[in-house]
Length: 143
Ligand code: AMP
Image (cartoon, rainbow, N blue to C red; front, side):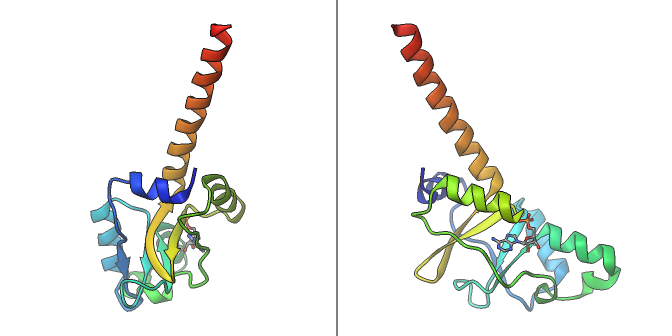
């Protein structure tokens, strides 16, 4: 299965982005409002400048409680691992597991076209395995 199919099946289409200049309070409000765990950081709403997740907020808060008054740029990750719509579920799941993050932005022609979370990938992987199990079950009980 390809990432493009997974993006199309997502209930919320499009990408939610935040600028590096936005405040951490605004970030927390957006994560809560959209019920998501990470946002793409983009100056122009299209090109990728970084990624920021709830884990960045928690880690920085642990070291410095005043980070809540800082900007997204101060806590984001700016070297981002991305994928394309042509990449496979298994490849992206593999890199998330190896690199220990739960979100990967999908980029086409330099523009962010979506984001997939480990939850999206696990959902489709389970559906795929259930389908294969049912096929095998059918085959075995037919003969
Ligand atoms: P997550 O597990 O996705 O909440 O993120 C854990 C850490 O990895 C945070 O510091 C994120 O900013 C960072 N991170 C998340 N996704 C990516 C990604 N695709 N590429 C690089 N860093 C990431």
